[in-house]
Image (cartoon, rainbow, N blue to C red):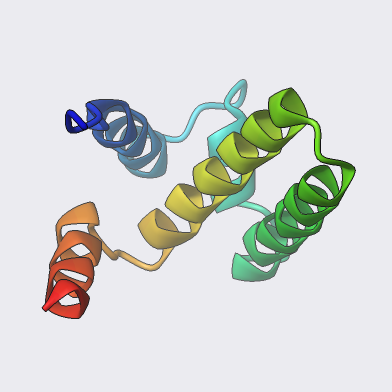
Length: 99
């Protein structure tokens, strides 16, 4: 089984960091990162997307599972960026667990 190219996660994370460092009024990511609720707004979205992912899996519709999981991954990336956690740090943790 060939390795899947997950470079899109790096691309998206880079855009999220760009929005964090240079907020834009028209950016959804910027609106999350600068929301008056702070990190709580991002955590609400992570929770919402986690529930929607669970419901999609329960509904057993592949397209919905893919869609909702992508939303969840996206909001997890926003959360990591908000807390200054890099994808490299996440990769290292996963590698440690692989042993």
